[in-house]
Amino acid sequence: MSSIDALITTIAKLPGLGPRSAQRITLKLLREETKLLHPLIEALSAVKDDVTACEMCDNLDVTSPCTICASDKRDDATICIVEEVSDLWAIERGGMYKGRFHVLGGTLSAIDGRGPDALGIPKLLSRAGDERVTEVILATNNTLEGQTTAHYLAEALDACNVTLTRLAQGIPVGGELDYLDEGTLGAALMSRTAI
Image 1 (cartoon, rainbow, N blue to C red):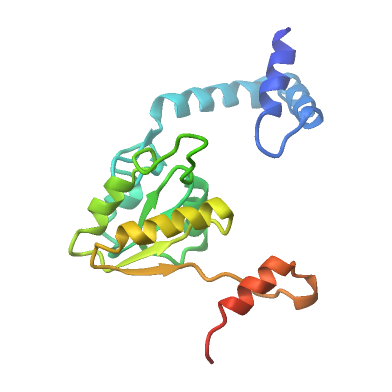
Image 2 (cartoon, helix red, strand yellow; image 1 turned 45 degrees about the vertical axis):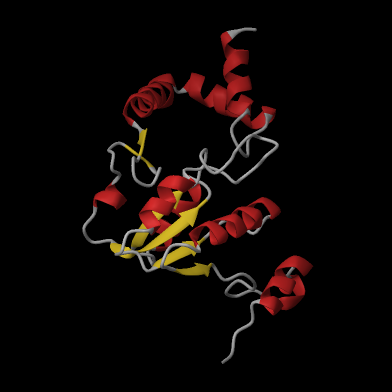
């Protein structure tokens, strides 16, 4: 396999990209070597050397503890549990949540050999047992695996003296009922609140 084919194959493995997109990206990188290829190589090398998992929450950052865990402006009373770093980044983009995080790095899966230790659940339980923590938010995805993991976490966190909450599910802001799938509409009906 040529180096060009190897690059195309590697790029095609990235999420949201297929062989055609990978070919276009490869050609663009090769045509604009100085402007794109060299900076990309330098950025990838720096990320490989500099990025580490946070010792407290497992976020990815260039420092450990990460900038979120090191910040004294964050609310120590809440911990938001997410499956992946991308979920943490999505919540941070919104700018509304000011508490702490715990990144699981996936969901519980006996088939894939991911148990509580692989997801850092013992570390989470230790953090949730801190007297400053009053609420733990279960922000796992609304999938079978995410719900199973949330159920396990709810049972495990029962011994801690914290309020457990779950992200609301249902109709998005601006959503119209006739455009929603049955699962989303069902979740909205089940999660209805008094007004």
